[in-house]
Length: 253
Image (cartoon, rainbow, N blue to C red; front, side):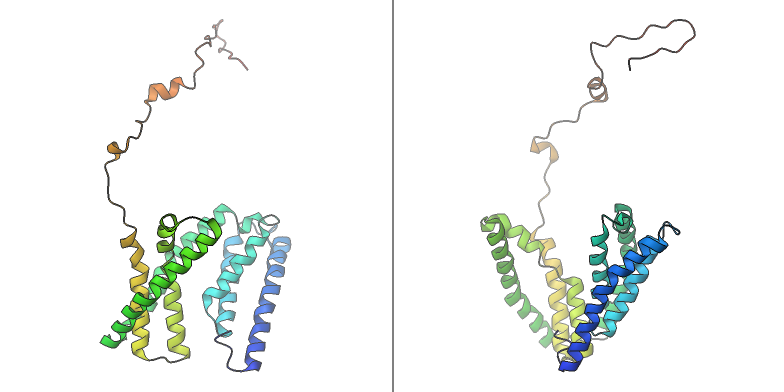
């Protein structure tokens, strides 16, 4: 809505296109499950990747970002868990996770090349630190307020959860890139957003770092020995079967 609100005509066309994508995706997945999957097994992964890339390209043309289209495909695919379980099975999710782990470094490599062309400035550094001072307490308070309203516990129980929700690495990079490419913001403000994104994405790793403790001092029970573990599976009142001739012993059914 923010990116396509320049004119009413542009906004209506983009909104209609997004609505059409959301309406067509279930039909595409349903057609795949009916006409393609029975005759081409083990093609779910390639099909989802192709649909996600195509939808991401369409959403990029509409003015948003690739991640929006891929997210829409994953959201619609979850609706077919019962009728087409292969699209959202554990095996499929594991394959998609490996795919993301392989290609995600290339995305950040490209983003790093864009950041490398920036010139750091004291103004941008001040803007980034100002965002940290102003926005971090606000986000912590909003997260705690929501958890307090939903679960009804005090601040101590929700402090770690609120801190863990602070990172926004991918979204910070995406929004900063959109602001720079589309709205041509000042380079100092862009550098400040990158400083803010980098600090807030690494902040929980320092605030939630637990001290190392000796495992033996925690009173944990020792693991059972192999003999004891096997004895738990043996019936002490069972008798060994008698051998009669060359036949193999017959145990109880």
